[in-house]
Length: 483
Image (tube, rainbow, N blue to C red; front, side, top):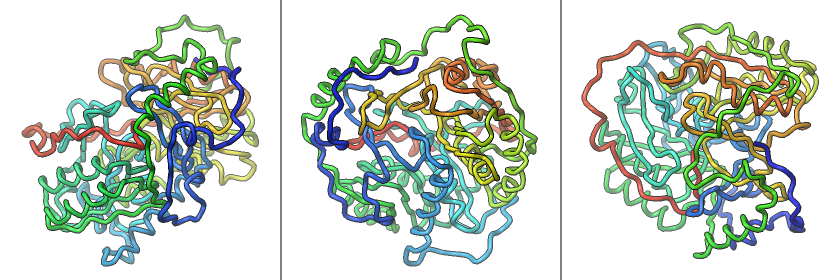
């Protein structure tokens, strides 16, 4: 299910897609000074109702990045949070070993796109506790809060802290997302959290703040209504003006470049998993190696249930031996290596990739992740998503997942990192994600590293999530994207 090269003439202007969609951008603040193009590219969605997608160049989701770039983006956002007037800072980190113990703010990242970014922001806020939302159905672990985005590609998010007490402190909450379009998701989340346990301060940290003026006013209005302070920090702030006929423009562009997408890549309106294929003989693809990590049973592989400063320090201790085991499995340790996370499992793979990149003689290491986001690939200069692989999602084969810009000849090795916690109906899906591995092995030798999925002890099922949390958020306006 790979894309082929286009036979359509290549536009001369590298910014052609912005122009043909009629998008006008005005940058009002730029922390790094590199401009909007340094942070995002542009692509079209596989959705006639939603025209386009801002594709981050630093996040490590849709596009490969040096692993340090994603971590640095989080560090830069954390620095902006620390610089906010009156934001509490501490000289030393508390241990945070207890499930609810912390001495800094609570940082919440949105799944799936911002799970690693939120981790990286929390790393830069001393004593912080981290928690990301999840879309994985976790039997036996009831959610504490839930909200929905009715027009999102994947609408439900849950907060599932191992100890719900992490939501009951008075410290500021820092919400982390990769971009703000209308800001409605952040506003709705603040309402949910404030109804659950009120506090006096919230911060929204994002790579790109593209809210229109009316949306910015809505943040001030909510702060006044709740009697709280709400700050927004971003690496770049810009106003994006969208023409009313953008859907028609996008449809025209998709039709013009349809020759660049083979039939297998053209998705129906409601995406379904690709049909099962007969196993290919070993010679039909590159070799595959299956690895397991020497991983502490009580160390979470991510922040789905909560992540304390103590977890952060323990991860630091295991990264070097895990990265060494990965390096030993590479066919060309000094070549070009892609480390690939899977959907919400982003931060730990990014840290493993960063440790691998720092080792002597490791060559060029890039990091990215699979994603739920359906994006239309076009193999044309100036278009962010040049190729796509589509496969049954490793944790739930009833839906599809994607990875972009991975093709034969780009990498000497691909390291796929999954966790062992599969959907209860398909326990083999993560342990042996044959569909994804089958696609990747067409491109390069594959090493599959399985991390043990952390599961906290079941807690008694209490009442359903707070009614205030079952919030149906309105449809986003531009720039839209699916986490």
